[in-house]
Image 1 (cartoon, one colour):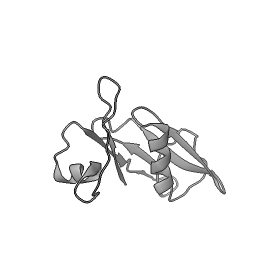
Image 2 (cartoon, one colour):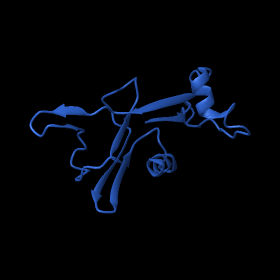
Image 3 (cartoon, helix red, strand yellow):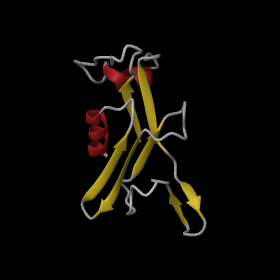
Length: 116
């Protein structure tokens, strides 16, 4: 999974993105065309590591996720691959945890988790 969000400017403001045609305008089109430069940030899901003792791929959620699920994920960026900026995971039958940090807003984090 990849997520593209507007970069937070030094003044604390974000790029306002209102598109008329999502295919030719907008954050995803800018990222695909390579014309975004310093306007956007791209995040990717953190790849899991193989755990020999249980014979499966695992991610460390620091005890915030208690059940295995295909919906569990962590987003990092290429500049700092060890820092998790957004994580989402199952803790009950129909209960999930979402943890996020700057530069994600609560709305952006929730929208990404909802779309997964």
